[in-house]
Structure formats: structure tokens, C-alpha cells
Length: 217
Image 1 (cartoon, one colour):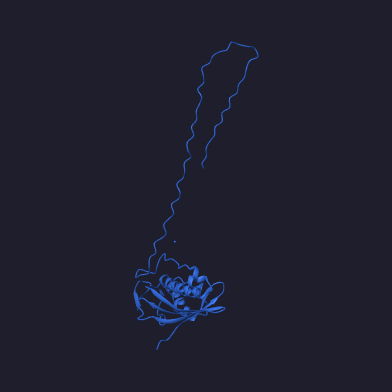
Image 2: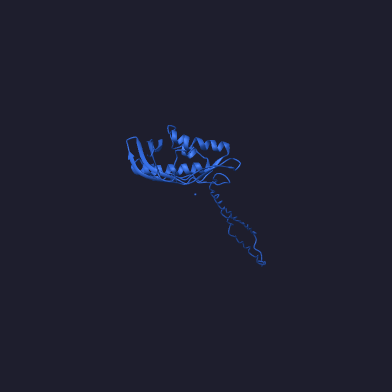
């Protein structure tokens, strides 16, 4: 399924207040005063309210890369950089690099949701290369280990409604595993950078219209 894909590298207190009221009364006729023992005054002490300890945040699960033991677990979804949200030549370059980070993520995890959000269904190579195969892998329980890509953008072209990016990519070795852990095959690392092009469309953000790997003679 990666016949043409040469690769990619490419976070109360409650205080009680007690009030005591004392009443007093007197006689109309004078009487000899009597001395009564003084009544000790009750004293009250208030203690500081107890403070409940703050709940301890649970640590995030450790990311585990795909391997012979299974697809990646707790793998972070790549975050689109601010630069990739700009309608500019620099934005086109940043988006292309981000897109290949999504390809890496897809291969590692069999999770195609993030890449589908920025891919038009018109991109046949995207669908056949790294969307449909990994949807199928997820259903079958199979996976790939590896997926280390490097992308070098050589030219970005901004058009009124589109963007074009020319780049080269290299890929590390990837190993395919069956659902029972049996090693199915190996996709060798690319021997040299492979040229490709992407057509992007703009609609409040970039998305991939087409992706083509160029023949080298």
C-alpha cells in the first residue's frame, strides 16, 4: 500500500459563633446587698477551619510507540502550528510539514480521524495510501511499526483560492504485523529523497486536494 509513498517524518469553613444572653431583674424594696461569689466567665476558643488538600492531578499516560507488541498507545495527536493556519506561502510550507506529522500519527495509531479533517476526498493518493488502509488495519487488528518521515519543502506557491507545495520526503523502515503479532512484511527505508507535490485548497484553513509522487528518470 506504500508502493508510491516514499515516506514522511514524513500535554468552609464554618465557624460557629455562640451568643449567650444574660437576663437581669430587681426588687422594688431596697434590701441589704448580698455578696455572691463571682461567676467565672466562660471563655471560648475558635480553632482555624481545616483545609481540604487539593486533589492531585493524575499524570498523563505515557505514550508508547508502535512496535512488535502492538500499535501506538496514548500517542499525542499532532497540534497544528499557528503558522499553518495562515493563508501565505509560509503557511503552505508549515501546513505541508504538519500534514506529514499527521501521516506519521495515522501509521503509528491506525487512527485516521485527525487526518480526515484536513483531507478532501478528491485526494486519491491520500485515501489509498494512508486513510483507507489504516481504517482497514484497525478493523482487522493489524498494524505497522516505524513511520519516521522527513520532509523538505522546496517551493510554496500561493494562489487566490489554492496553494501548491513542492517537496521531497524520505522514510524509515516500517514493519507490518498481523493481529496475532505475526510479522507480515517490511517496507524498506527510502534510499534517497523522493519528490512530490500537494495541491491545497483554502476555506478558513488549508486542506489537501491532491497529492502526487513524481516520477524520477
